[in-house]
Length: 345
Image (cartoon, rainbow, N blue to C red):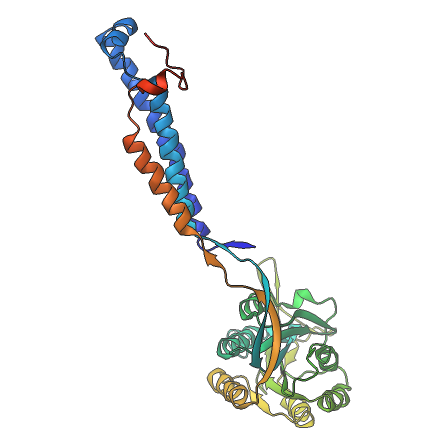
């Protein structure tokens, strides 16, 4: 396995065609000037030891040297083996509501973007804890299985959108049911489920499913987003912003139903958190996870990637130094072998 630390330096390879272009232009210019000075036969007599091949060889050596130096800047890293690492932490699963009501902007910039911000900030505070993400609307879908790769969690979270789910609505119970399949460590005593939603639940099974989750040692916390006053649901069609209406043509106003979220949190032995206050919500979760008992678990990962840039830098410098000692004159002892197609006079 390998990875490239700074692949952007590969753009420097564009210098090589320019170097060769400059080389051929200088070569053309020299020949043009030389023709004005003397004919080709006379020039050969004036400089019998000049090698036409070695100038090309020097350019090849320089080009290879620059190529190796650029690869060194990219810094290829090699990983050799998959190893088992022991870590200690808790399992954290986020169930993110991506129903269209989460697009309401009664909380800036929108309920959904505020939810992503809260989850991102919480992930930044995690140590070696494992994290998983579920998205739900009319149905629940796994966005990211439970993992220690926090960077991947943030990357997948950024893609969460209502268009990713096939049916609309808010089925909190489906998300709780799916979350129970995420905790694959039977020995883990601290399992946390955070439901981030505006509380609009179109099913009535969330409480019973929360009780089942609690029996499996899953503590359910809810984070509410939105206001009691509420706001309209924007619909973006080809850059035109409209608002969702009912069958009678009245604008639909979606509100925060914190009573539903508080009931779920109480049933799940957790707490309700006001997500409209971002800093306070993140701080509450951070303190909660820091003070939680950590359980040791095993995870497989590739051994640390080792820097390999020094090999490429070394070869590149060697080739550039070789170019300095590689003269454009014919090499007498090699000339006898005729390696460079240099015929003896």
